[in-house]
Each structure stands twice: as C-alpha cells, then as structure tokens.
Image 1 (tube, rainbow, N blue to C red):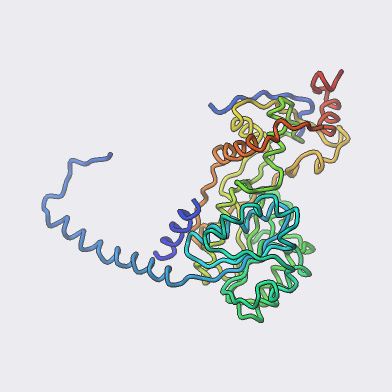
Image 2 (image 1 turned 180 degrees about the vertical axis):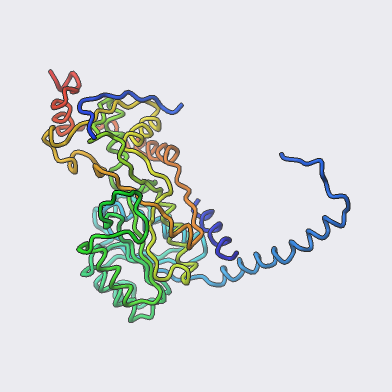
Length: 398
C-alpha cells in the first residue's frame, strides 16, 4: 500500500516498401443505486473499518516525508539525455528530496545557453544546487558533499562511468542508478523488447551495467528510447515540423508502419523517483524507461501535422534505391524499435502519463514561438529522395 501511495504521489508530482507513394493525412478530427443501506449502522460500520486504512495511509505519507534523500545527478551536457536529468530533478524536488545537478563542462560554455541548461533556474528556485565539472573527479566538483543516491546520466561506457561509480562506492553512497539505453537490445522477431531480452554484449552500456551490479548492493539501470518534452534540445519532432510548416512532403523510409516508442521526459523522471523512494524494490533491476504505447512512423508524422493544425503529405521510399543513408536522412531508426516498461509497472507500481498527441501540441507551440519555422532551410537529402521516387515538389523538379 505504501508503494502504491508513493507511485501516486510521484506521478502527481510531475504532472516492406511503397516507393514513391504519397499519402495525404487530415488532422484527427453519477452513479446511484436504489439499494441503499437499510440501517445507519451499516454506514457506521464501514466508516470504522475505513479508519485503520486511513491511518495506515497517513503513516505511509509520514514515513515517506521523513525519508527524504540527498540525490546527485551527474548530467550530460549534450544529446537527448540531458533532459532526463532536468525532469528527474524536478520530480525529486516536488517530492521533497534534496538535489544537486553536476553538469559536465563549464557553466559559461555555449552549450549552457540552450535548454534544458538555460532553464536550470527552475531547479535552483525550487532548492536544487547546480555545479559544473569533470565527472572523473566528482569529489572535487561537489566539494565533499555526501549523498544517499547517485544517478549517472552521462557515461555511455565503463571508462566514463567507472570514476563516478568508484567515487560513489568509496563515499558510502547507498544507491547507484544508471541511464543506459534500449538501443543495446539485439534484434528480435517478437517485439516489443522487454527486460531480460538479449543485449549486445559489446555495447558500452552493457559493460557499465555489469560493473555496477558487481560493485553495489543497491543499483538499477534504466533503458530509455526517444523522448519528448519541453526543454529537449535534440531534433526529433522538429524534423517533422520543419517540413510540415513549409508544406513540403515528409519522406519516411520503408512502409511507415515501423513501431517506435516516444516518452515524455516527465515519465522518465517519475520512474526514477520511484526507484529512489523504493530502493529495495528497485535493487538489482533493469527498467525499460519508456512510455506504455508505441507509435508508427507514419502515425508520428500525422500527429505532428495535427499538432500544427494542418495535414502531412507522406512519401515512402527505399533508402538503397534512393541512394541515401537512412540514418542521415531520417531521425528515427528504420526498423521496429519498441520496448515496454513492464518491470516499472510490476515492481514500482509506475504508470505512464505520456499523451503523444497532446504532448506534441506543447512542442509545436515552442517550435512556433522560437521562430524556427520562418528560418531559411535547405533540404538537399529530401530533394534527392523525392527526385528518386518521382515525387519532388515543383520547385525541386524544375
């Protein structure tokens, strides 16, 4: 029951090719009962039975309030994962925990002018501490402060994470958490990926997971996929918006029916917070840090167009026939890349709050206010693809 109360609190705190084929999309358009108790005594009896439950719930909240943790987040200064640390910090602060964010590099660097770093005042105004430095010397960066929990949201291999893990162990840190990647799963004929599926043994993240499992009694690893959310600085949905607002075709490799998973960063923050608040349950576990619904690549294009209040013209293509590298021409994997968060639901009582159509509206509002839609852009790879499949816009074909 205490875990369920924690889950509710944490969730509330953060509140195959069709070459050349064009598809035009449109935007997605009190109980009562006659059988009342026959005597007031029945009501009184139920109230008496409910009283112990209420007292237990209050006690659970009281214990949780007394069990505030001091958490250090070692945060990357680039890539899509930076926003994870930002939302994790917000979730922890909302739940009453103490937070220090150590960001790689220097506070005055140009990278810090971009979100989520440019929004760190939201964290400090809520009581967090923010420092900058080298993760290879965490002790110097944090000035000798002590912590109950450390999250490494920076390293991708043992060379980068080992200094942080070794320092945490020597400093007596009780729980070590690591942001891994769902990209370490091997290809499967039975999607989605679930915890326990085979992984690429050569992947750097796998080496880190093995190391912290051997070094810490209380550890957990989280494997995210694609993320969305205010403050994210990696182009994903923006790639679609760039084409949609300019009324250009949206070239998608393959059939467009490939499944993927996009999670709002607040979901990742709430899952991590539950692990901090339930260390015994989380100990030694792997968690797919993702939402609980998949989306097709075509579906994502349609949702992006709907968020922008318009339609999308989708063109499918075979990358090999078009002579392009899909990794350079498209921001998502040209394959099924879909994991499910089964462990988090079963072990932590976690629930997802991601609502992709609504979350994309938030992202488009930020996109529009940034002025990016009015900036001059070139689409050389797009034009090469569209010409190859005979679907080039008039301005390109001329």
